[in-house]
Image (cartoon, rainbow, N blue to C red; front, side, top):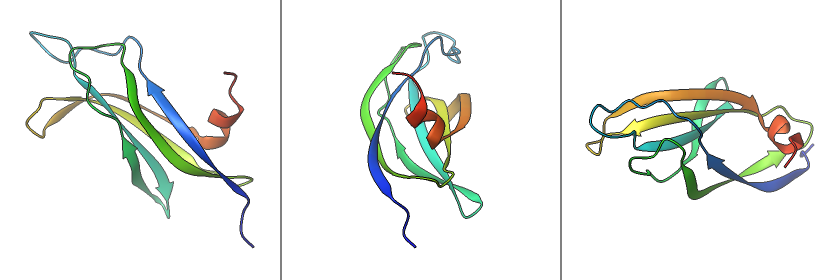
Length: 104
């Protein structure tokens, strides 16, 4: 039986991020992953915002929300250095249902 589903858009921001740079502020990017078959699979990523510890990302992550099915999500914030490397800032895991049911 197919689950009922709806397309949802995730709008991502960060507040009071940890500064991992020495001479400037972090250059954050957020990677969104979903648990699929026991492993994390990337759903999307935001753009990188330079020198900002309180980013409001413009990139919208669009994904399917399946009603009555647990969907585990992980948001990983990284400080990109511009050379393909990055430093971890932090991450959070949650369930899609918690995001859908959260107050606006």
